[in-house]
Length: 441
Image (cartoon, rainbow, N blue to C red; front, side, top):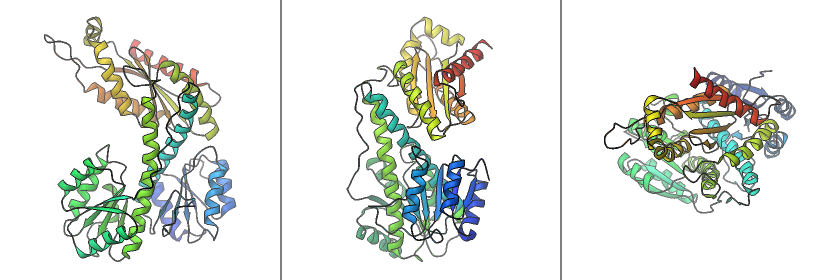
């Protein structure tokens, strides 16, 4: 058994599962395959599986029941379950988090897995914050469940095939807005909220791919799914499309109503993720945060960190802690002595809060010391995250007065992963000691 497997594939044969497993393994999403429900449940009991992919063609008749059993088997850890098959459009009792049409390209699967796993972790984090904030008399707003129509942006020239797909989307209950150029598309994306984007790759296939790539470079647009609608004849390969950030690929060879259903499925999944991310963002306005930076206060962080550590053990997920302490460089010492560093701290803290993921917890432990709690993150990934944050802030110049050049801040960084049987405070102390050791060194 692959003890480092991250993804469980449930399929009775390797027609679909074999190429998918091989491709995901190459992309770093190590897989293990179960041939039936009992083998799948056994794998979940033995391994810290992050998500499951079920082949509907071979999984048997009770696939919805299977999905619910798999999720229940690892509770309270949230387990995303993806189905490979045709979406049926009935989401009221849907046990699958997402249904993707075959053939499922490994790069496409990896993109969806990344999104679903992060959403699951964010949902777990929101549940924990409900408890932490509730102990202090603050009730967080629950994730919004919007019943309004899905909003889809259709980008491309009005070719007959593309218009037919737009009509199918409208007939499926979606609100469709058309944009003929990339400039108009990005104007719409920055002005209005959308649940999905459809890119018509008619005679300008590279432009469609450029739009998808541009969305992935923008933090506001990063999560919005984009379907590439290809002409029947196309030189764009599936690997290239998914590498540029496309979420799904379809062509007029597929009936428009089937493609429309696939787009609605992507939009449904996106709206769910946005709801939980929005609920976590609202915690900043709870009144319990540090007034200057908007980060967790030291006491609030301590209480939440203890809860995070217990939850990590229950869910068999890693938890890492980072400490970032402003380093004593000559220009920083001068700025501290003359009051300019104190003026920069609110901006520095605000940047720390914006540079972490929504499911991460950022705190101000002392005047010049910040801490991060990163759920479902191992030591190496946590160190990379802390170094990235330090590098971004290190490129920012802070005011030092009219007669002196602006100064920059560097950080001493300490990172620790909570070990089995170790308390959260002990791990935080190890991270802090590591940061101090770097400063002394």
